[in-house]
Structure formats: C-alpha cells, structure tokens
Length: 563
Image (cartoon, rainbow, N blue to C red; front, side):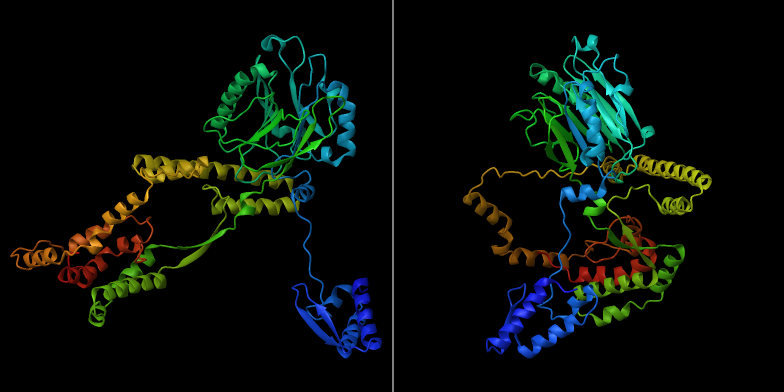
C-alpha cells in the first residue's frame, strides 16, 4: 500500500547506512530544510509505515518533513466549465458563419451527438444560414435543441438571396417554453435576431438573458449597420436594465463600441484567415474566453467556442456580518430611565479638563446603549435584492422542502404564494422610493435608483493641476500653512480681553435649545467620531440636554480660547 518512491527511498537509505559505513542520512523537506536521521531512527520509521494496513493513514505515521505535500485539484476555465456542464452561470456559446446551414445539418447533428463541446453548449448561434420559406423547421432541427430563425426578408433587405441568422437553445440549459423571439430586424445594413431566455439557473444579479445574433452583410455598410445596431441595443437596455445582453455574429469590420457604451469584446482569435470578423460583445467584463474550432463543412469562417469565465458576485465576495440594534419602545423607555437615574456630577468631579469629560460622558452613553438596546447579527450577501425580505426567504425554504417531498399540488400552491409575496415586496419598495420624492429626501431617492439600476460610479476622474511645478506646490504649502508660522498672540489676547469685559453675554445657550437640536437629528444617520448614534440623542433628548449643557457646553464656553 506504500508508494514506490517512499519504499525505494527507505531501502536506499537503510542500504547506505548498513553497507556504506554511515551512521546518519540527510533528508530535504519541501521547504529546502535539511534533517538528519540515524540508522535506528530510519528502521523504526520504516517498521511503523509498513505496519499500517490502510493507505490514507500511513502518511500520518511519518515525520512532517517526510510526508507528501497535499496537492490541490486541477483548476482553470476549462475545468470549471466541465464541472458545470449544462448548468453554467452564463450561457456557453458556439458561433460562426456557416454559409448555408441546410447542407451542413448532418455534420452539425453528428457534432451535437458525439462531441461534448457541442452537446453541452447552451447556445449555437450561426449567421448566413441562407434559409427561406422553402426550408421547414424539421429539416434543420437538431435533437435536444430548439430552433429560432431569423430569415432574411428579401424585399426589406434589397437582396436576391443569402443572409439569415438562427439560434439553437439547448433543452438541458433552458426549457423551450422559457425562450421566445423578442425582436427581429432586417434592413439593407443589418440583420438581427433577439431571443429572450430565462434558463433553469441564473445568478441573482441577472434577471434574464437577451441573445442578439447579428449579421452585417458587407464592409461598405459596416458603419451604417453599426449605428442601427447601437440604437437597437440601446432600446433593449432601456427595457431590460438587469438583463445579460450578449451580441454575437459576423460584423464584417463593424463594431458595437460607442461613447458611453459598457460592452466588452471577447473574441481575440482569427475567424477568417488572419482577420477577426466574427465578434461577441456582452455587458459583463471578462465574461468569456474564446477558443477556435474547425469550420463547419466548407465554410470559410472558423467556429468559435466561448467558454465561461464569469463568476457570480456571491462567489467573488464574501457575505458581511453586520450588527444592528433592535430599537423598540421598551428599549427606549429603559434607556431614558437609565439616564434619568444617572448622577452626572460624578463625571464632572472626577475629570480634570473638558476633553477628558467629553470622552467619559460619551463612553458612558455608548455603554448604556450597548447594555440596554438588544442587538442582532445579520448576514448580508452581496447579491441580495432590496425587496428580498425575511418573509420571502421563509417561503423559498418552504418551497424547497415541498419540492423534496415530491408533492406537485402543494408545490403549485407555494409557488403562487411566492409570486404574490415578491409582487407585494416590490410594490412596498416602490412606494418607499416614491415616498422619498414626496418627502424631498433626495439622498434616499438617488441611493434607491442606483440600487435598482445597478449603477456604480466606478470611473476614477483625475484632475490635473493648472501649474504642476515645484514653485506652485511651494506656494500652496505656504498658503495653507500660514497659521503655523505666523504669531497671532497679540490678536488673540485682545479678543479674549474684550470678551471677558463685555457686560452682555455674547452667546446664550439654554437647555431647550439643546433639546431641540437633539430632537432634530436624523436617526438614520451614522454615528460621528464620538460614536454616539443620532437615535440615542433623539430618543433621549430630554434626559441628555441638561447633562450636556451643564457638563460640556457651559464649561467649554468658560474655557474658550480663540486660535
């Protein structure tokens, strides 16, 4: 049961010790550290290893430096795609220009039957199919795939023949009832077929998939076709902001790149000779990596396989564990009683200056809040939607339990409850955003809009200084540091003397004024440097106003100094 390398090593070591007049043997660990063993120690190790009957356990009877290092399993894009098979996070594609699919359908059927690359591909997308009304769907059908055709309209395109696009959707990846043709465009400059797909599995951050198969007939109309394509894609973005849009096909030197566009091109291998004519764009960066496949039949374009490189947000980012306070009426009343029974003079008598007093009172208020108000830990996943609440998660867990039991009648009932709960929570979130408009709370409005649209301001704008020279930098330093080297002692002394001899108080602060300011605080704001939450100041404004006025504010005025 012992590996040959270890048995050979022990035999050679013992042989050298016995017959070569050596009393020790050196071993080198994987970390290049040298260890020395005597002949008696090596015989003992060999006896213990040979006496172990089970292979996984023999390695643990050896010293650490002799144990084999554990190796990880193979990784990479191909390995991950092979493990996912027909349930990828995003669709795997095989695309290309086939130049008449009717005379290559036998080869295509053989590929999908005997080659795993074709059999497990989510989508097969082809251009220049040359299909007409004379070709029935059954003639170009592939087992296990649903065909979606976008034949060329000869009158609209101004052509006599050719053209056409099509897409095959794998049944293992998406049910045929969950895919439909959303849009079809046929002009002299552009042919485009858009298929809306909702597969069995999608990451939560993606609502559905829009597959756009594009064919620009000629290089002379590439610019006009690209403009029409950009307009069509913009309309799809407006209708489906959370969809994953993948645009592929024969662009014939056209492009989808435009100012303000967030589409990324994934094909970097030649598709016809040394030129890259077949392109694939998507609205997710690093979603695919391209791999060349042999051409289909006698077509002059190679097929391209797009392997999935994308990883969902929930796999890339770890969930955050957030501690939140459970504010209730009972907790607020208990906290108010705690502050009512506090002797604030203890803090004023024990502290020597205003800074120590402020830190002490702030720490005491924070201690009381942590002691009285209960808290709980909430795990926030990076792909959570704002309307996915605790009630919806409970229904989803119940649905999983019913699905495992195999009761189809109860499964339909729980599915209706889930759909109703999702509609209700989405409506509540919509009303919450609309209420921010009526309350003129624009910060919450824009935060909600960014959350719903998925917009993130990731562009880092750099501003160049008007004069990037050493002299300009020294001038800025002199201006902003002028208070450090200028002596204002005479001005400060005159001002303090005038304030101390003034008959009328220059500033009056009452307990009601402090209470009003505490009551106006926004409880949803974050705590400041003193770690006092606005919720505490607002809920206990009557109890804290007097203590802050007598202990902090008025002593601070007595020690006022102008800098």
